[in-house]
Length: 445
Image 1 (spheres, helix red, strand yellow):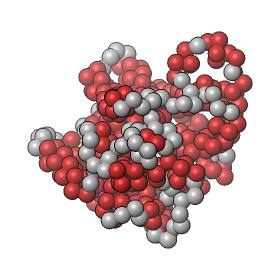
Image 2 (image 1 turned 30 degrees about the horizontal axis):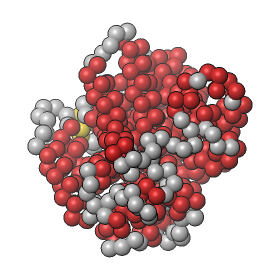
Image 3 (image 1 turned 120 degrees about the vertical axis):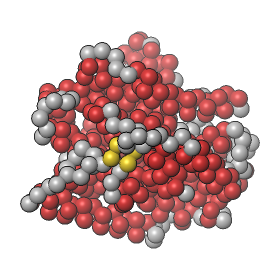
Image 4 (image 1 turned 180 degrees about the vertical axis):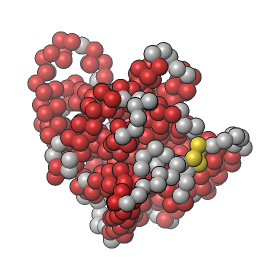
């Protein structure tokens, strides 16, 4: 279903990707993101998200999308003719990546129960509540009776959909689903990046990201953090391609991925908003004047409208709109922030230690920092987009710990390692694009 839904949207947006495997990976990831939005909105309007509703909604969206197929030339993934040792390096790395991802997916078939606290405390519980209560329910045992009731419903909705097709609450089916979608992320990233990145740069870079220990550690977990990282990462690639060449169809894809990220976890909206801001700043730097404001406004509207629908449901059902751990309005109180500056320095230091820890993320952080600085000098617009998102995103994530009313050591210790995934996936998945652009004649950002 994900494959068909994603392929229909790719067709409608005029985005053509060369290579059947890459096309399948991008279609699967795009269909996954699209269904995350569909499922969330279906729950908000009161549907039970049963198996027949899932199929009917997906088919309706796919059919409606195909009716709006655009005519004319389409963007197509370009093939780069690597020669000599570069060709063998690219082929070797691609083979290793495929083998490694295949092993991870195979391992997921024999995975034991997820023991992460957040998984069984509320993610899986919410999925079961959707399944048993026939949608979102505010009564005892329902969706909002578990921790973090303000979290958007996309992640538990996707797991509840698996339960419907499995014929019951079969949590043993989830690790394979999560691992397969994780593998699809890497293939989808390769499909988008291959339009501008040579194979000898692309495949080794993605292999390094895939080999990061934290990727394998959380790949099968029923947690939403990697899903947010995947959606933001793919959205970032699509935005970068539009920045570089206004590649047709990329901004609609970015809008879908950012809407999915916003409906997956609270920080997904913040990171999506930062991405739009970074792209806008980079666009202004590139042209020295506002360029094509309408596409950027439409891109910004996607996560805003998606999250607004969820907030309306929360308000209509007398549920908290924000977290009990912090209030966003506290970020506007200088005196309050000044009194708690030690929380900021502690959280920033811990988060930096996590992202630069080679036992968690290999050498992705220092490589990303170096490539980002060089890109900022040689390709200012692309550098601003890349480093701007990383810096603002880092500040945004650490600010949550700054204004939180929970013990800072506990709050950081129980979440920072997972939260860092969005930063590192973004840094790692865009790294090959930066390296490829640095090797070009400096005519573009």
